Length: 394
Image (cartoon, rainbow, N blue to C red; front, side):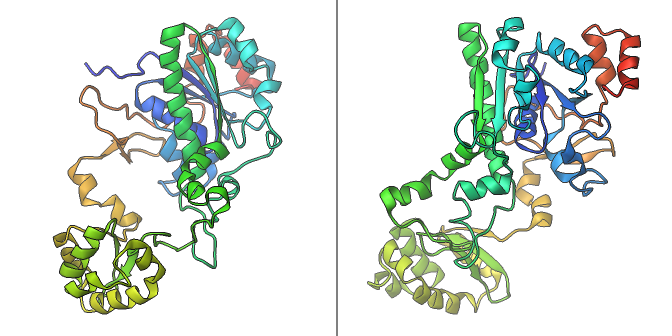
């Protein structure tokens, strides 16, 4: 029997875009029943971001498998009442609505805990539930900017955003782990709790290395493209066939191996210009000339073979097509198929293999696919559901 850690846990989510859906999809991966509340007809606006997955949005496909879709127009009393009925027996409420929206509907901890003291409430917002930025709108790129991520990412001339939704991902991960902790805490106390997750604080935590590097006004790490800001050689280097190899040296022992095996120049390891990392970092332009002179005579495969022989960490500069076909992911059977409104699609299993259970990998729902069933479950008669549908409440 495949018993998962969150079997029997019900999560209601007022979610859109990425942060909250990423959090709740991971709860669903562990077996939780996740009921996704969407707007009638259109649903989560992330459904319309693009049509890259056989007509479905790439963002939506990523973070919404294994969920049930319930459409409710929460501006209508009947729909809001249905939601409040659901929350009386739910375990978790997750929401990342606009600042103040949940409170205006009466979905506060004070109100909800009167009916369900065991309910765990998780609010995900750009800046948190208090402070001068509380009501400020926040999107992933804006938080990357506020958190200083752009100041250390990119080239010296051009700040660059991350190629994925890193601020949303950070907030979704901290919401996920905080909810798991809150469930453990509830087992001890018998009571639910409230969680206030800020995108700014989540990404700021991930910025702690550059923060400490710039401690007490010190010069922050510079933007160096794909190269490491403070370790060298560490980053992309060109091979003679036009390919790019990423490599990284972490210590002086590896520097000696790099010189002897890869560059085939043992004397270079003793060169006082380069015998410590801070010196190599300061004189990276001179060292690059030496490395390029060697690598230009080799193919990408030959450079990687030499790096492997010297036990120097390295990687290919892969693209998305290469990642889909990555031999390591295929060897570890990380791809499965899940159902969707447009048919079966490939999906990656969550990171981390557990010997005692398999992850839940169920369908991606269509808008409102489960509305009728869910409303029936909470005792709303069929004629009232039909009336709600006619009034556009569902």
